[in-house]
Length: 294
Image 1: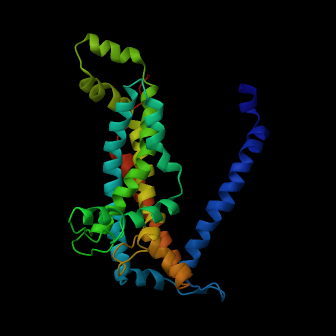
Image 2 (image 1 turned 120 degrees about the vertical axis):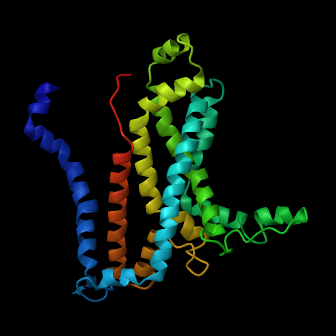
Image 3 (image 1 turned 180 degrees about the horizontal axis):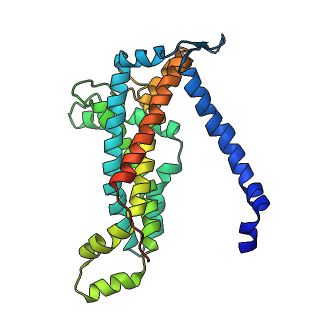
């Protein structure tokens, strides 16, 4: 192995496929998007350089303001709820023997299902005359307009979609935390029990410090995923009613593929990229990680 690691040709051969894939799938498209963000481009005519005009338009776009507000709401909601629920489920399933794999698979199952299909399913469940409201009507209760109510600073449809997203993706956080917890030596817990700690204190003083690197990783994944959140919203509300449930990704899609404003859509994409980088750097700065031997 040491001889192989010293062989620079072998290293280049093994790195080449990933480097080529990264270059053509990520790096070049990102550079093109940055260039198009400075252009007036509709895909039918060559890009025309217009400087910062697209970024000036961002400042006066009222729908973009709504999209940023909703994206930040998703960011905070997802990071907080998936951290709490993911840790709770991971700790709970780690301490049970019978049925662990069954419950783990049930919770993780929504993560591998199609978001488009789940979006359509939940759209019918929260339909005004079907699903939940139909059950409530049989009880003599008039159900709310789950996906159409526009009252409040954070409107009801955003809360509904946020809880659906939590249900779908909490299994991912749970699996990450379970993988980290399973790597902690049981002797540490046994020593803590001998010293008089209960399971709550052991979780606080042993589990949490040792899984902190995974917490930072999971929060970064949740933050990036929530900022580029698209499929559930598009299939449940399509950004409506009256653009009240727009997020950055849906607004980008509307501008690019509905109105063919590829230059302006690229500017939104650059803004989304910058937000993802800032949030990731902030999480890595706030969540301090230390290396421990387990």
